[in-house]
Amino acid sequence: SNSGYSRQIAYVDPQTFLIKYGKYYDKQNRLLKTISFLKYNNIGGVYRVQHIEIKNVQNGKSSQLIWDQDQINMGLTENDFTKRVLK
Image (cartoon, rainbow, N blue to C red; front, side, top):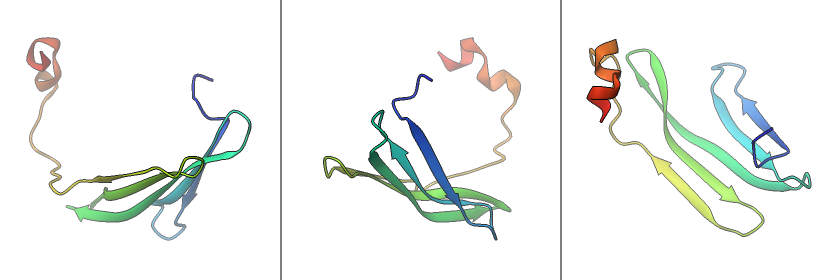
């Protein structure tokens, strides 16, 4: 595999089927990172992650990803994703 991890484990809430947290293991099969999906937002019946925290348990560093504005069904078409438009 091209991944930098030997394995990844995702823990899914059986009621909502949303990922709650996960674990990433390095090539020596030691726990490397944990990821927590702290908050989801229901936008028009679609659950979108709003807050993620990632911790590197080997070096103590962490990162947070927070989406404060998320929109769906914005009326985009296939033509909005052509090479010419995306340049």
